[in-house]
Picture (cartoon, protein in one colour):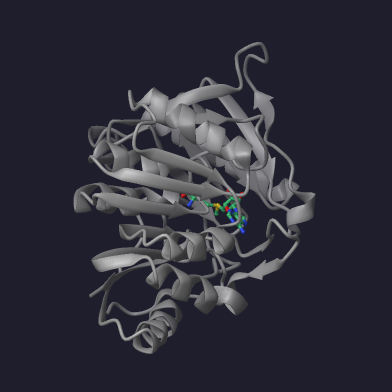
Length: 315
Ligand SMILES: C[S@@+](CC[C@H](N)C(=O)[O-])C[C@H]1O[C@@H](n2cnc3c(N)ncnc32)[C@H](O)[C@@H]1O
């Protein structure tokens, strides 16, 4: 196992900008969506022809916009539009991105590419635009695994389901938000996939998992990427640090022999080492032999940025 990287951006860390050579590699790999910059005050994402600057303060916004202008002079790439988004401390204060510069009459939706796969972006849909860029390596791994049956819990816009379906899998996508699942369906259509063999369940993942187990459904790959906090369908409080074992134990009941499970979280208390330790205890209690793989984060995510993720394989 690789050493545990710090999970919090260092408050004194200088903003790191993507090097032009890295940009070429990412574009060469068929991506038009990646991080351009990451720092303690926020980050900049390229989303097709546009950028989104996410910032913790006005000073950080100014620094990131200045950095973007300098980076543009160096590389010759100028975004068609710039959106900005404030990063509040409390989820309840989250608001959608706002247009900072560019044509306000253009649509707020667009399509980006990753490894040749198309994903819809919507700047008006809410705080998040539709694609979590830090999951790029995990999406690539899921596709390479070529699983036959995939369970994508907390599916959001179903990006994991899309890559699994492109690899030939049947998928089940679960999310409390019907709107997010509708965006997932659109992502399927954007990639020429119809819904045959794919289910989209607008429900509480923690309630669906036991039902799937009871129906003897088994999956070769399971994606567990829950939010840090949420309220379930029945108002039940979910807190990943506290309920991680409940979720993984329920997932182990539907994991096929030699199945792969992605464990992913943005909770700062759960780094990959802690995730593995707690997952090992669950596997032992369920009498399933388990091995683990830490892929790390894509090259556009410096240490301390992005989700903590680990792949688990169970026998
Ligand atoms: C972090 S996002 C998941 C991102 C997704 N894995 C991806 O890579 O695009 C969390 C999602 O969990 C959903 N959610 C929250 N609580 C849930 C629950 N109890 N059951 C199912 N979905 C839930 C939210 O609606 C949100 O779409």
